[in-house]
Length: 111
Image: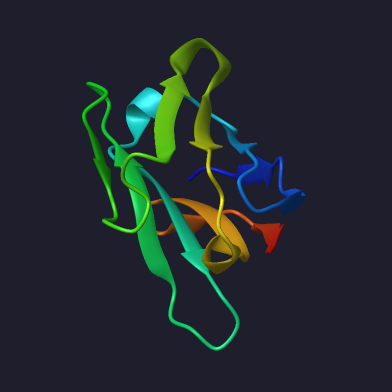
């Protein structure tokens, strides 16, 4: 079992940047992979980015080249650096591994 707590969301103008954090209650090396999802109003939850314990990463086509997922094993934290944000990135962003989910953090991009 693990608790996941996201932070770092907020309101930003289009073209801006945000960094989301996901703090885990135990070693993230225990869980493989760690994921970021997002859900916009009226839409299904979608997988945004994934990182494995050996730091292999994968991204949704819609965010490739703009978002970067990373991890700090010493801090039990996974990050999502989001650059060149667009209005369509507006969503609640969730951290996930296996069956465990965080509470989500709202990201709103104004155009």
